[in-house]
Length: 269
Ligand code: HH2
Image (cartoon, rainbow, N blue to C red; front, top):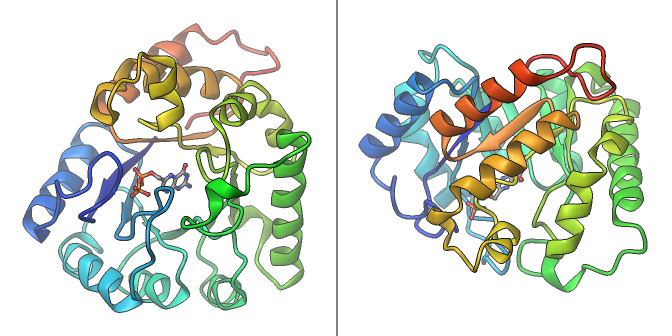
């Protein structure tokens, strides 16, 4: 269970809630107490259409939080950044892994991960957050996302990044239509077949609102839990979620109901 804290003014669901370092640190500690196995801290919104921000701004938002919790948290910290200079500073300040929504496209990011041997979440995204929703033309979305993730992982391994350090994520909502997001969850075993642990981030995303009478982001809990449980049943090893306590409880029941030895049985997340 990867719990999310966004220290941005404009994230689609929790933007502006944790702007002061004090409130962000409080939220980090709260989601650890609620059962997050991993805390993902992001300082740049990557919602569709978001304008990029300078690295310095991103780092200025992250620095005080990592200073406060970077070396003292009982669970690993992941830094949600596609910028190698920010990721480097975060790792230096105590982050344990990089959640790269840029999918290791940047050679400098690959160099950083090679040098530091930090684990990485390699997430699929076409284009950039500004342009991605204009790039939703796929033939078979699952096959194309799987082959793109595989290609990126192969490049990373060829450059010396250990295979065991790579996790993959289809990037729900990153240049995909609502139907494409659903298809990626339905056929998640095809992504697991790549041989990397799969991370899935459906939490509060707009394709869930579309299925629930247009519910607003903070009213998408039931929808997020349904997606988390089904994704986990289909092989996701890490579920990224904003509502940590509720997701943890839903996954505990799903785990207890899992049939041992079935194809979809997976290890702990
Ligand atoms: N989704 C978001 C951000 N980072 N990382 C991974 N690995 N997978 C995801 O699905 C993913 C992600 C978008 O959600 P959020 O952080 O809540 O919003 P915003 O980008 O507006 O800050």
